[in-house]
Structures are given as C-alpha cells and as structure tokens.
Image (cartoon, rainbow, N blue to C red; front, side, top):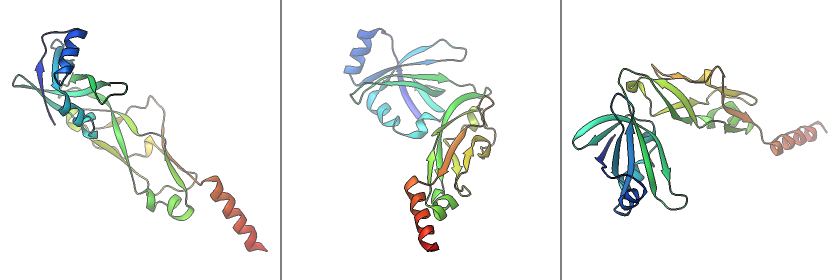
Amino acid sequence: MKVVAFKRELQGSGASRRLRNSGQTPGIIYGGTEAPVAIALDHNALFHALKKEAFHSSILDLEIDGKAEKVLLRDFQMHAYKQLVLHADFQRVDANKKIHVKVALHFVNAEISPAVKLHGATISHVANELDIECLPADLPEFITVDLTNVDVGHSVHVADLTLPKGVTAVTHGNNLTIATASVPAGHVAAEAAAAEEAKK
C-alpha cells in the first residue's frame, strides 16, 4: 500500500494546528539508521486508509518528496469526539530484520462446528489480534482461526493456530486462549427440562 507524505519543516503545537486547519495531519517516521523525519499527510486519505484492516498490518510504501521508504504504522491519535486524525507514527523497516507487530484474527467456520451445529453453543472470541514476529516480507494481513472442530467446553489456544510460513507468535511462554465455546445458561436449563419431560 502506498502513502504519500511531505517533509514538515515547522514543528510545535501552533504549526500542527495550522497544518490540521489546512486538511493535513502531522506525523513522524523513525527507526533504522536515519534520523526521525517530521512529515505531513493528507488527512482525508489517511482517515480512510485507517479504516482498512490491512493498513494496520502491512508494510507500507511511504513516499516523501519522490523517495519511497518501507514503513509500518506504529501508532495514531484520534480526536476525542471529532472524526479527526491528530497524529500518525511510522517506523522504518529493514527487509533483513524481524518485526514485532499485532495482527488481526479472522474467525471462520463457527457455523459448522459441533459446538454451534449440534449444541447451539456460542463461540466467544477472547482475543481479536495476536502478537507476532516475522521478517517484513512474511507479514500476513491477518491470521485465520478455523473453528470447524470446536465442541462445547473446548477452547482454541495459540498453539492450535496454523501460522503462515516464517511467522511465530509472541506469547512469552503462555499458550493464550483465543476462543471458547459454551452453551448459554437458558439453553442448558431448557434441554434439562425437555429431558425430564421425556422421562415421564
């Protein structure tokens, strides 16, 4: 994905305010061997890009004054109640160095799992993103969590996930829970009552 930015000479809150009033968002690029660079981005283009999941977990081609750099979006600040991006931080990436990022989880096949199909269970998503480490070229847009075989009382953990080639989960030794399947309390009571009725 490509992002166009411009070098920003003036800094400080007054300069940032003037920049925002002119439809631009201040930002910074840091990391690597070069010094941090203050930049300005088109606000509307950035605002719409931030709505795309891939923008948060892709290596971006950031072009400044005709020169492109590979970067990752590291942080951004939104206005408390206005639809306004106040600031964006980008980190340079080195193709040969591993990066540590959070990637979204996409849950699939819940409707065909035994938990849902046979028992009317609810599958709760305990986590919606996962910390991973990989080389920039191996960075996935998202990680798929296949719920096909999940039954009632079972959980899906990080160790159960099939991670793309070159990608490792950063869990600090914990096999974190990603999803759980449980039958709603009312449903259990109704099943028990039906079973009692059948005995009579």
